[in-house]
Image 1 (cartoon, rainbow over the protein chains, first blue to last red):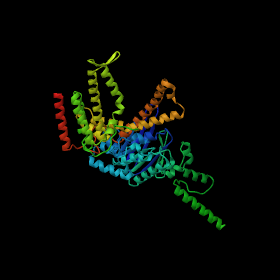
Image 2: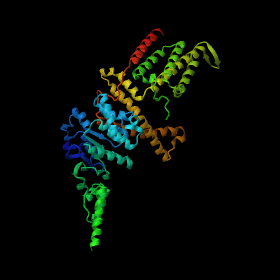
Image 3: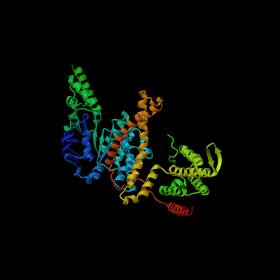
Image 4: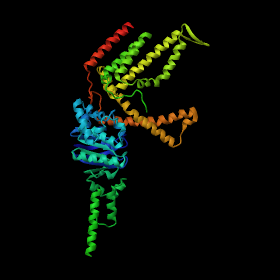
Length: 281
Length: 258
């Protein structure tokens, strides 16, 4: 569990990047973090694995405070992080050595490393690329490799900072599906994005605005506030926007839908209702 | 890009040796070769031929490794034959080739050629990973002196890992500039120098940013100063021990008697 208590952070004294953030993230949750550029998303998630430390307040991971350097290895083992640019996070000369980097840093035996590397690569479907140099993989595969690197450390959470922003739509889909599957297996996901269409799998959405936690709730509740999101400079998911327009036009459609499936079902049932009405008249 | 020194997978005796054995042999060889005379140079050459035969590296491939360093060898040879005092062999106006110079030239260039070949047998028969690990293990004693063999191995690994990324980046920048019609290299020497500046500046900036991100990524994956473990572990076989002892004895004898 990650607990953030009264977190304040600034790089320079005059400008607060994060102000008075309070939140708790349970194990196994899929949390999306959204916000305009410069709202403090990246700064916030970098507190979760102690890459940054609070100016005041506390960040606790399973009760361990990020204040103490001594607990950093354990915190970073529990909270794996995937960065935006896949190229700049690979450190091995081959795919398997890259996955072995984390477990190697934990000081595991080479038999244990072997086991974890094989399992992790199997899980993300990169087993056949084991001995390839990582720079020869595609963008999507590179992000899967980064995910395997985290899995091999046996992390509780995977924190991702706009992991799909440099990927083509197909790779993006593959990475998102992988995250969904890992979440179903009990791994918590914290996903920073500015593409709202990627949030269909999230249980919970955190909205940051100028370093403050502006909203924290279920995706349905957040995305219902279409105009508010627009004011923050965020485009709501396209489906939510479609529903919103239909409601504006006077159609009696349920709010808070954000998956294509749900919206499709809703529109079809609405059409059926209309047809019935027409027959009855 | 063709790299003549690159690892070629194989299953020969030399491929299977522990990297430490090979590194020690190359170091010992380079110590000995500095002492050799013209006749013992032949013995050293015979040793290299033996190694290349045992490693089953095709001769053409091995000789290719000399190509990039050839200009240096030719330069060295010219210096020796023209600038060594002794009995004149041929006179070309003010300069003369001496027999001592010729002997010296053949000896010195021969030494360097054998050195390059020895190192090439090492790099062609050993993967970069294993080579780095061997280096790391050999450097372990410095951990007791406050250094870190792990950090050195990590630096070597990262340098090798990021070389292709850096090249790709360089091509991108070059293409971006060409697409905006900045073909400076056609403007003579001055243009060529400026094109290097225009290429290296963005490249350096990008690379510094890359290092920054890399440092974060490594830290996020629990990298720290101290002991690490590895996916592969090195094991010295009886054959390795036997060879290392042989190499050390031969080296000591050569250094004393040559």
